[in-house]
Amino acid sequence: MNKTILILLFFVFSLFSFSQTTKTIVDLEKLSEQELGNISQSVSQKGWVLLKDKNHNYILNCSNKDYHLFFSIICEKATDRPGFHIEFSNNYRDGSYGGIDFLSSNDDREVQLLLDGKSFQNPFKNYEETLFKKFTEALRNAKILTIEVYDHDDFTQELKLNRSIDFKLENGDLIDYPVQCNE
Image 1 (tube, rainbow, N blue to C red):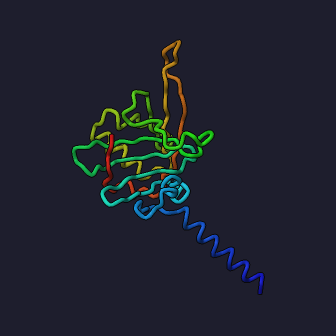
Image 2 (cartoon, rainbow, N blue to C red):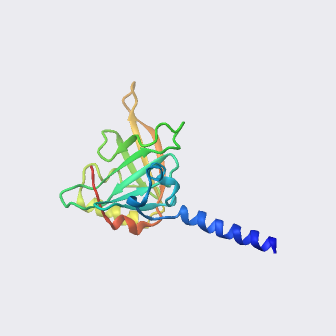
């Protein structure tokens, strides 16, 4: 009997833990300040997550433990342009970088976006509707988004890879929600 109770408790605890880390749509108004500060602990870490508040939607990807990717494909305001920005997570290095911006789609650095290894350059930088549409169609079916960041070498002025950041892309249907575009 005790063994059955232990197995049942383990099963219930596992379901609770699993459900806590697989949220794909989150109402921000229902989260405490502490939960907001540690959002990656309560959302899916396998791909896109839709964050909703009373006025706006946001698309977030926490599948890389060191970075948070905010992404906008369809803007709430037709006059805004799609974009992305990456912040350091609380896991990066000693944890003191959490929330600090690392990169955005309008950065001066050379950035390349790859979907399952296929390069789309930076479709946000010099926005062209036809090329951007090809990128978004590929994005819906891709498994991995890699963002490569290049810097100029101080001595040779050649581009050198600074870092390559991978994000998983489950829940691809969420990128079709209109979101707040801050770029």
